Image (cartoon, rainbow, N blue to C red):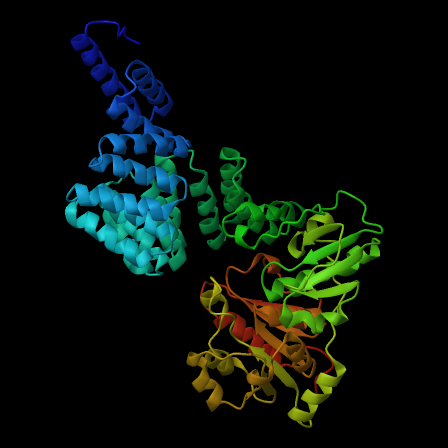
Amino acid sequence: MPDFSVPDGDRQAGLATEFQRARTLQMEGALHAAQNTYEHILAVEPGHVASLHMLGVVYAQTGQAQKGVDLLCRVLEAEPNNAQAYFGLGFAMCKLKQFAAGIECYDKAMALQPQFAEAACDKGSALIEVQQCAQAVASFDLAIAWRPDYADAYVYRGNALMGLQDTEVAIRSFEAGLALKPEFASGHLNLGNALQAQGDYAGALACYDRAIALRPQDAMAYSNRSAALKHLHRFNEALHSCERAVALAPGFAFGQWNRSLVRLLLGDLKAGFSDYHSRWKTERFQPIRRQFVQPLWLGERDIEGVTVLLHTEQGLGDTIQFARYAAVLAQRGARVLMEVEPALFDLFHTLPGVYQLLRQRDPLPAFDMYCPLMSLPVGCGTTLDTVPSGVPYLRASAAKVAQWEARLGSKSRPRVGLVWSGSSTHQADHLRSVGLARLLAALPAGYDYVSLQKEVRPDDAAALQASAVAHFGQDLHTMDDTAALCACMDLVIAVDTSVAHLAGALGLPVWVLLPHMPDWRWLLARSDSPWYPSARLYRQQRTGDWSAPLQQLGADLLARRFGPSLLP
């Protein structure tokens, strides 16, 4: 550092030189060196406003956002009309996740400095964080109007459009930004995410590869790349890409979770479920994470005489699939409390191994340890050869079965229950659901077909009304009702929904129609399931093409290839 104990003019010149050196270091990304230089300037001249300003920004950039806020507020006390200081303060506030305050600062910056494109762009990013994506698009549009060559604004605008599920327009916005700034690694990453959401996995892969070429240490790009490779059925490459992501960032929970999905799909259940537990550290799962003062059980201690709470965490199908572990823990001597969704409560009274059944949000009795349902395979050391596969482990109400039998009337032909769509809010529903008209066209005559759907989408309503399929959706109040109706069927045909799991848990013959990229629990290239011995799997050969599985399913129905309970 230079000697500042010199005449005032020379001293000010030296400060100016040091300030410019600090700014250069800051712009080059050498933030800690820049911080040291700004701090040295302020040690010599505590009121050096420009250094207070830039040091506040550096603090925000290096994870010291509150210190940054404090310095920037000092700057604004001295210079209340400093638009750049308001801009920096908005950045620091957003680093503290105080997005509303950050947005207010950006507005003040724009009021003080006309056509402040950077403030409009950063305001748009803050609006995305508070789920105000339409307002964010408007803010990015303003930034672009003020600065038409602003590549960052185009790319971040694409993120807002993705939040509005306007994927086509988002892709065009990403592409516009990248045309202006081809070296923008995050832009390639985000374009890859948009293309993957659209089902263009090869295009997504090319984008991730470009992002990695520009930023080789980008763990997120490697992780997202693995998902594209998985959809392209390049599974070993997908696993390698996950491994690279985790190697680059050992604490990267999303990378570990992505790796778990590949490992589980490949049948490596022990390692896969171990990785799957990392879901609780991801943004996707943190909102539903349950935390108790009692310790989490993952198999590390004996549970003889221990009261263990098992709680639901995701969908109804997941709860049905993993409820089988209650009996496993009971056999080890645990006193099992199980919390389930209200829709499953009546049905789960038949589940073996449960000492006390609870509904979600019921007051919890005393317990010693707890485990989320889908972490039970970790504690139980489940492998492909040790899946607890005894069925049935759920049973339909005999009284309700009798009621349904009476409503269905005397049976002269085999009954086949149908489920052709799942929840429209499921992120992969467009891949797993089959239109009813398409399904009915593949089904031969000679059967009584019964809808097991609770809800029918508008697109399927006309086909249902024009068919001879019996539908009782308004009377399927809980899964206990659906289970009883399923029990009246000789066969259940279902896409990958909770009813497929229900039929499997009831030990009923169930044929499951699977998309080209199945959920991990159905594994790969096999027509049976280790989880449900009564299941038969029909798989797409190409994404979106149901012709092959439906043709085979129809042929098997025509040939009566599904069990001795059917009429000859």
